[in-house]
Length: 129
Image 1 (cartoon, helix red, strand yellow):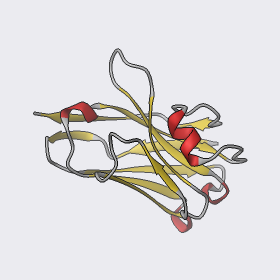
Image 2 (cartoon, rainbow, N blue to C red):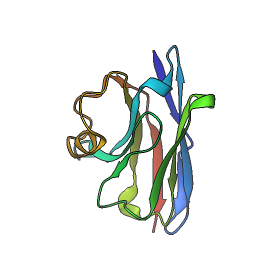
Image 3 (cartoon, rainbow, N blue to C red):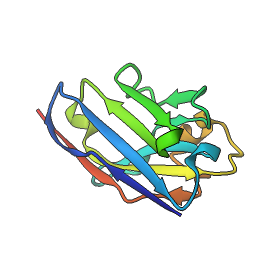
């Protein structure tokens, strides 16, 4: 099972980026998918999560109204649209999956990814002021 996050980069404050999380070796459709981030010197932080069919989502307060998670199960990919980026959004962003979700999306975000089974390599997002 592999997850690969991509789409990171350097952007000015106020700008936008769209991250992608692609899966190989398993069907994302059966999984809850979350995005998490870790800034230098800080602990991992939950950003957002989406349920299997996308009907339920959860967001950290720090990104509500600016970030949007979505999924295209036909492409086996989950996206994170990030708008109005701030310097404090600078971090390595990771996607993770739980293919037998026991917890709610809200839990995965609040617990900073505890319970997620599969993690991809991260993608760096840097927001300059």
